[in-house]
Structure formats: C-alpha cells, structure tokens
Length: 226
Image (cartoon, rainbow, N blue to C red; front, side, top):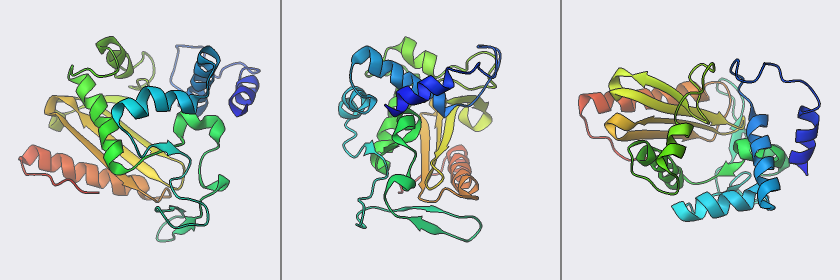
C-alpha cells in the first residue's frame, strides 16, 4: 500500500528530466520497480526477493528492517551522529527506511551473506553464471547512457589497480553504512560495513577499501575479517 501511494504521488508530477537525457539518483525509482513486480506477480516484493534471490543464494540471515529485535540486544544497533558523537538507535520504525522504499534499501544480512551476494555479482561478471543469464548481468553492470557512469544499481568505472573495470556502490539508512567494490579482472571484491551512518562513515570505509586495494597491488595476503 505504501508503494502504491508513492507511485500515485510521484507519477502525478512531471519528471525532473526528459527520460534518457540525464542521471538522477532515485530511491523512488527502485521502489516503483518493486511495485511493478508486485503488480505483475501478485505477491509482495519481500516475498519475491526472498524466493528468487535469498533462498537460491543461501542468504539465510537476510531479512527486512533493522537486524536487532525491539527491546533486546541480540544484534548491533545502528548509530547516528557526527564527529566523535555516536547515538545508538533502538530497533523500531525510526531505525530504518520505511517499508515503502524497501526495494531501495531495507534488506539486512550478516557480513558472510553480504559477501556471498557480492561474489554472485563478481562471478556473473566473469561469466560464471548463476540465477541470471549473461545478458542480464551485462545489463546490470553496464553504465546507462547519459548518467555519469551509473548502471542498474552499480557505479561502473575503471581503476589501474583493478586492471580495468570496477563495480562499486555505497549505501546507508543514516544509521548504517556499506561500501562495496568489485574488480572482476583481478577476481577480487571488498565489502566494508559499519553500524554508524553519520559524517565520516564513508571516509572510514573507503580508507579500508583503499588499504585493501593497495595490498592487492603489492601481492600481499589479505585476511578475511569482519
């Protein structure tokens, strides 16, 4: 119902740009895509993504909303703030994005399952296909024209240390932050997460990505760490 309400409000106004003429980062766009899937399949997006992605890839920890249980400390809590200030956010409706924009970012999982998901994209880029065809992976991993290097959910670029193509993205609900990089030509990927979404989260996670890429270039062994 939230997604249909969002669809109604967004489509009542003209788009900011002529379609295909420029780039506009939009959580709403992914939410509307989820609403389209719900209409075609006749089932909630949460059920579809569980059946079509989580279960086949073995992402057993994947769920929706914050990972912790209200009134319990059974998982890390997200934090807000800036500088050295950190304020924990108790699990609840204010601790995550609203379900209406779920397709754009309400999924949680542990670090191992996040690595499995990223490895799925790395394997697809290298022609090791699972769940999707090569055509589908190519569409996801190719920048759309006139959009400053953005594909369907991935920033597509090139780096010398990667021997060419990279896929990357960051994401945050303002209380958590994730930074992902993939270098297909080096058969390498890096996932860095923090349960703090304020100022400095990007810099901290990006510093870890940078250190890992330098280790890759130097040929040093890279430990798997959470």
